[in-house]
Image (cartoon, rainbow, N blue to C red; front, side):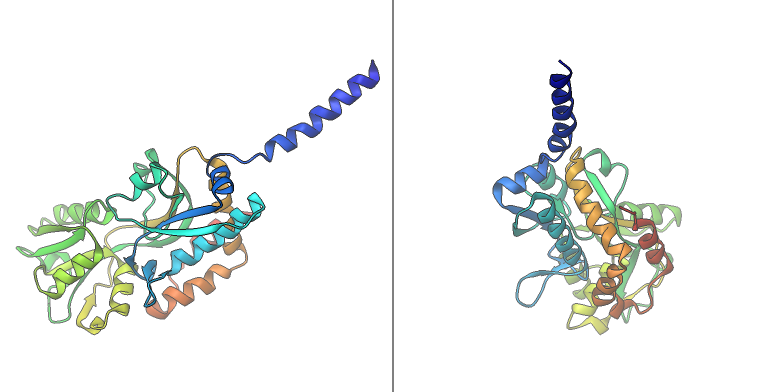
Length: 285
């Protein structure tokens, strides 16, 4: 009898770890399909954009590649990466609707959005700012009375811009666009007087544009924008794989190399808030 009890105990002890290793949610789906689908914004350099060869590239894309490697390690198999372009308007619907597995790019983590999706550890920190043409002397909100300011709809910048105008009692018209490209094109054609977006995105747009020297970006920011990758809610195992990849980059300091490659050449010295984010993200194993 004691021998049978010992056998049963051994089965229970060893069965639990094996069961814990079973793949769930998105990880199981990736294992079964052999591919991971990454949603990205196609015109928001240096975070994510299509390069001259038409391939997705940028800071967030490179971070997502580390997530892919961690997923491959977790499921024990190589996977095909499929990049799927999304918009500010449909990005969360696309994720919740299981058309992509992870949302990377310039997505701000907020509490209200956390009702729809889950977020990984932070990937970047920035703030919203204004871009004008160089010959426009009104380069901050106080000088835009009666003017038009463009912004992509359904973004945190749009909310922050509305709040800024209310707080400063500036009677300016907000013009909504579907993409950054549409907004910047309108600025070029002087259909709007300024374009609002995350400062790092504005820097990236100006640096990549052939007429970049025609733009001026306000040094000041009027919001706090913590970027993170988004995943489907209640998918703890997949989110942990993404968090592990981000933490590994922060602990090894390899994230600084990625920053210098995609952002440092535009901004120069790293802001202290970015270094603080890296320290907070360096979660030990």
